[in-house]
Image 1 (cartoon, rainbow, N blue to C red):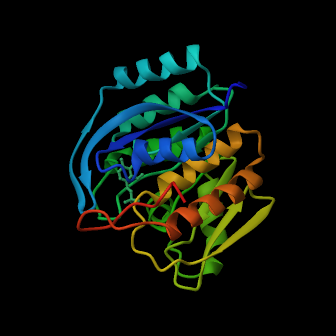
Image 2 (image 1 turned 180 degrees about the vertical axis):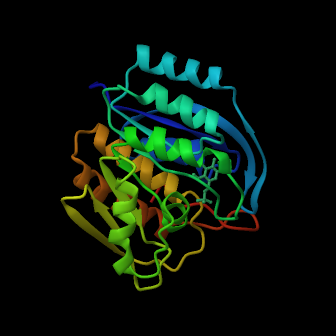
Length: 260
Ligand code: PLP
C-alpha cells in the first residue's frame, strides 16, 4: 500500500460533528489523505449553536504538534478555530519554518454568531499567522473584521483580497458565498494571477461546517501535490457537492454532507 499524503488540522472540536476537527477529518477521509489533528479547543455545540467553549493550554497544543510533525510528518496543514491570541501566536510560531503549505481559515464567529476567537486575537492573526499562510480563506464577515473592507458586490472582492494579501499570505481566497446572486463567487489571487471561481448556489440552509470543509479540502489537494489554483478549484467542487447534499439534523442548521 502506498503511504497516503498526511494532512494536519489545527482546530477546535464541534461536539455535533458538523464543523471543526470533525468536518476536517471527514473531508480528508473523503479526499484520500491521512488526517491528523491538533486540538485547540473543545466546544459543546449542536445544530442550534455553541453552548460552551474551552481552550486547551498552549503546552498541550505544542505537544500535539510536535508528536505529529516529528514522527509522522505533514504534507499540508489547515488551521481553524484558535480561540485566543495566545493560541494564535503559539500556532504561528510552530508553523514558522515548517516545510509544508499552510491553509489558514481565519475563523472568527460561527454562523449562529457565537465567538470562536477572542477579539483581542485580531492583531496576532494579522501580524503572526497570516504571514505564514500559503492560502488564507476568509468569508466576507471575516474580511470585514480582518481588514475593514466591506464587500457589497462582486466588484468589491478584488479590493478585499488585496487588503488580505497586505498581511502577507501568499494567496487570498475571498469567499463571496454570502453575496446575493444565482452563483457563489469566490476570488483567489496572489496579487498577480486572478482566478474567479463560480458555482451554482444551492438553496439549502444546512451549511454548517462549510468553511472548515473548504479549507481542509484545499489542504488535502495541496498535500496531494496540486498547485494552489488547482487545489482551490478542486476544493470548491468538493464543498459545492457537500453543500448541495447538506441535511437536517437537530432543530437548527444541519451539516454539509461528506458522503455524497
Ligand atoms: N465550531 C468550530 C469548532 C469551528 O471550527 C467552526 C468553524 O470554523 C464552527 C463551529 C462554525 O461553523 P459554521 O460557521 O459553519 O457553523
